Amino acid sequence: MANDEIRFGPFRLDLRRRQLLRDDRPVRLGGRPLDVLCALASAGGDVVSKDELMTRLWAGRVVEEGNIYVNVSALRKALDDNGEGHTYIVTVPGRGSTGGCTWFAIGGLERTGSAAAHAALAASISRVAVAPRLSIVVLPFTNLNGDPAQQYFADGITEDLTTDLSRLANMFVISCNTAFTYRNKPIDTKQIGRELGVRYVLEGSVRRSGSQVRVSVQLIDAAIDAHLWAERLDRDMGDLFALQDEITSRIANELNLELIASEGARQPTEHPDALDYILRGRAARLKPVTDDTHAEAIDWYERALVVDPQSVEAQSSLASSLAGRVLDGMTDALTADVQRAEELVRSALAVSPRNPRAHFARGQLLRAQGQYEEAILEYEMVIALNRNWVIVIAALGWCKFLTGSIDEALLLHEQAIHLSPRDPGIGNWYDRIGRIHLLQSRTNEAIGWFEKARGANPAHPGIWIDLAAAYALEDKFQLAAAELAEARRLSGGDRFSSIARLKAFPGAWGGVPKIRALFETTYFTGLRKAGMPEE
Image 1: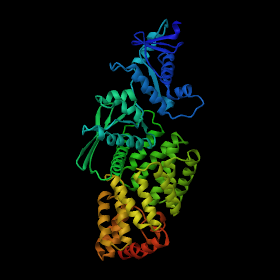
Image 2: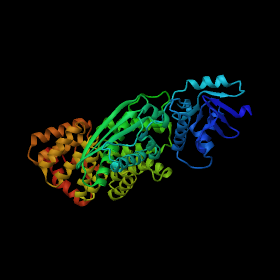
Image 3: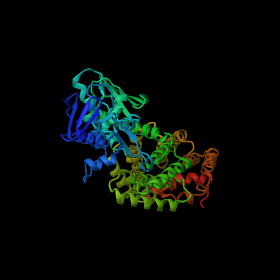
């Protein structure tokens, strides 16, 4: 009997009867959280890995790993239902060959009649709580109007943001049902982080005044209670559903950029895993597009594949980066990049047929190969899975242009800019809008957009080339020659040496016959006038 009874703090766990007592009074605890507690307590103070718990609790069943964190969170709350702030369940990072695997342990154990009680207690005291990376809870948005009838709008934003964030790769998001239990309670972000096992807390408020609505939101690092990012959006009420959709889309996009940048900038860990390298690659891709940022991202993804050759995320990210530098005209190994991307996409989709990143990579590859209609299908599939992925919206827009849907292309690029007005890739979107105007002989409008693009990303040689063509069409030959020279200097190679060399990149300057004809009569005519030779 003695070996079936375990004490920690004011609690007594009877393993044989599966009963938890606090000061000899029963504690109400669900079956699955109780299973977690029994598994941890039976380990005698040793850590138990997430994978071990998954195997023990859901043997033979396929479940999301987030189930572990949800049940651990419920267990933590049950053990701290008097609000004293004790943390009996602790989370520790993996060690050695386990890479970033998460482990759990229970602190303060005392097994009745056990000679190892003191050793178990000592082993558990030094544990440091560490939440999974890219883990977040969206707390219920506060309705500042005080009118209960308006609460639905704040709740709708909370729910939509939770849904949008849960679609992001590698993101662990606490469910709305759990988040809403914190409504109207004092906010202690450190405690919430410990209770829910999350690194970040997102909180916000909504205030309506007449026909105006103001939404304020802030991202907090729960471990150190530090504010990382804040945004305030003022909008006219108009269509409530459209307004709510716009607000959640804006916040989800900007929050995703902030989280990726924050995680990618963290110092290297002692034992970096594939996800560490993937996040660093994504952080590199958040920088303005240049030869160097393409190379940096590709290098990080290659490292991720060395650590985990079967990683679908690493394969997909590397493939989209390889295809991306082909599309940006920033590769001196076009055929090799396309072939490697093709192999990676094939491998990723074989393992994960509905993976959004794998389908985005395939869309990029198809566009680089000049298969625009097929690429559109891939982009549309990705947007159906994640409606706020702006880089896909913009990619779809350019593909629509290359197939002749010019008005739709403009609308999609304007949508991307509206959803992510501070996006690192915005220079590319300005540039594409400029090209659309140029090909329709609206040269002055095109120059305005190109100059705006150059201001956003002055290191992108393709933007200088576009300006060279536009200036030459306006007979501003001195300016055109200067732009052409700078583009060649920035590229550091011969990719802008001739018209024929440019046409080798169909994803950037190709299209259906109608679009190719427009390129010939405007864009390439301008480059010839600027002094670019045919061969």
